[in-house]
Length: 457
Image (tube, rainbow, N blue to C red; front, side, top):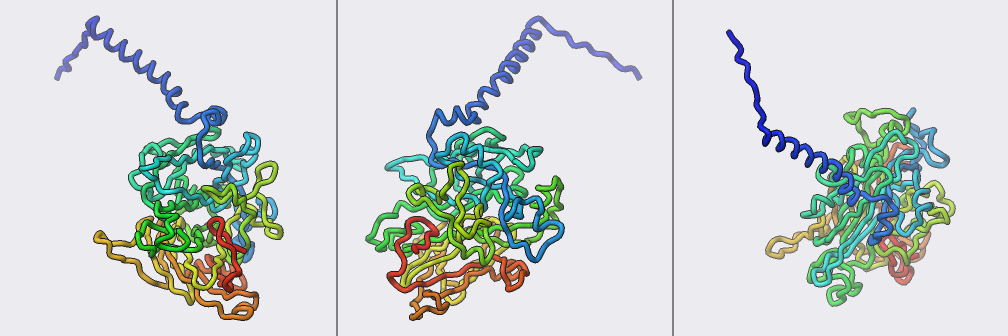
C-alpha cells in the first residue's frame, strides 16, 4: 500500500491573508488588557471616577463562637487572636473611608456581611443603585489569590455582566475594583454572596441579606406607618417594625482547614454551629454594635474608630465582627416584619412559640395569585430551604402587665430552629444554636425604629 504524499501550495495572496490575520490577533491581544482595565481599575482611578452608593471590601478575619463543647482539633482554633476562635472570609462596608483606612480592614471581615437595602426602581425617576466591590486579599492565607464577586441571589433578569457569576461576569482579583449596577424592579427580601469557589466562600462567610423597599412606601392611606413589605395596594403587608433574620452555618473543620492550609472533604459536611445574624444563642440577644443612624441610608453603618475598624459594644468585645443583633422588640398591637433568608446548606424550620405569623412573601414575591387572590397564610413555623427567603408579619400580643413574664419589664417569646440538630450546639444549657427571643414591651416604652433591627430602646 502506497502513501500518496500531498503538498500545500501557498500563493502570495494566501500568505498575505495569513500574515494579516496574525497581525490582527496580535493587536487584539495587546489591546485586551487595556479593555479589561476599563472594567477592573486600580482604586485611585475608580475613586477619581466616583459614583457609588455602597463600597464593600472582601477579605478574611476572625469571629467568636462558643468554645465548649470543643471539637478537637478544629474548634476553638488556636490561631485565632483572643477572644476570637473561628477563621472566616467575609465582606466589610468601607464606604467613605480613606485609602489608608480601607486597606487596614484587611483581616477584619464581619459575619454576616453588612446588611443593605435599596429602593425599588422607579421608571418615573430612574436612579441606578451602584455597589462597588474591592478585594483586599487574605492576610492569613496570602498563598490564596481567590477573586471575589457579589452575586445578588434571586435578582430577576439581571444583566449577566453585573450578575457576579464569574463564568459569565467579571471577578475581582486582589487590589482591583468593580462596580455593580442594579435596577431592582421586584420588591422583597433577597440575599447575596460571593460566587467564586462558592461552596467554600459561602461556607466561609461571604454571605449577607439585601432587601428592596416597594414604591408604595410612604403612602399612609393604606397603613399608618407608611411602611410596607410589598406593593399590596391595600395595606396587608404594612408594618411598624422590621427585623432581618439571616441564617447561616459553620462547619468547624472547613474553617480550620482554610486557616491551616488543608483541604476539607466536603462530602463530610455537617452543621457544627447554626447562626442567626452571624451569632448563636444567647449572643443573638446581645445588642447591635453602635450604629451610625445618620449614615445608615442603604446599609447598617456600624460606628468605626480612627483606623476604620468596627467599634464593639462595651462588654461584648468578642462580638466585634458579628455586629448584628437578632433580638426582636415590639409593643402590643404593632405589626412586625421578619425578613428571613437562608444561606446555609441545610433546610431550617423557624418556629415562633405562642404567636402566629403570616407569610406574605416568598423569594421576593408577594403571595398573590394571578387574579389578585391573597394566598398568604398563617403558621407558627416557616420552612426555609437553602437559598430561600420569606417575608412574614406577626401582630404583637398584649402585654401581660406588671414586670412582664420575665420580671424585667417585658414578655418573652422564643423564635428558634425546630430542626433540633441546629437549635443548639450541645453546650450546657442548650445554648449555641439558631434561636432568639421576641420581647413585647408595654405601649409607650419603645421609640420608633430608625433603621432595621433597631430595638427602639
